Length: 204
Image (tube, helix red, strand yellow):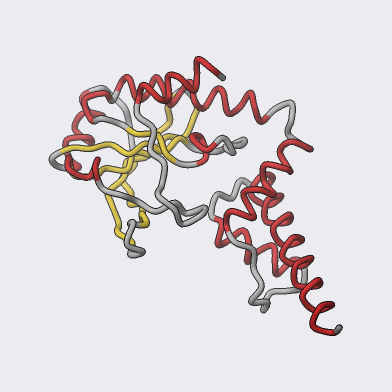
């Protein structure tokens, strides 16, 4: 009986942490699932719990939160982000861009950034292209989860396009065939090509 009650309490705490993490991600513009869930657990007095929700549970709670509290604004914001992503991908067509992340999955909220994977013989080619087009950018890095469970760090460029934060993660040309792992559910990560994003925009 006590075990059943304990299990019920554990489930409820996971749900509460997931809901609070979703609220934090939406209202405090935090995109990192790990940080959001630990911040949520601390706020709920469960900082030491081992019963943290999975990332996909948090994303499910985020979708529910947005449908309740962002129903008027989130779909419009998502539409604008996808339109901006499409124009950026057309602009960067020479680098075979792929849309990834929350803008592709449909959970992007206010202040979300557009993340594109681009492919070139060297990362410097992408930076040179941006310079030639007069686009100021910041250099950075992005850790990416690989299909085998390990991670790798790739060079990235950050800039603003149409008042939207934009991050280009640069991979070697052959990296377009490389399987990546989703940060949400651990399965194969989605990457959408230009034609797929155009369809999303036209059908959205």
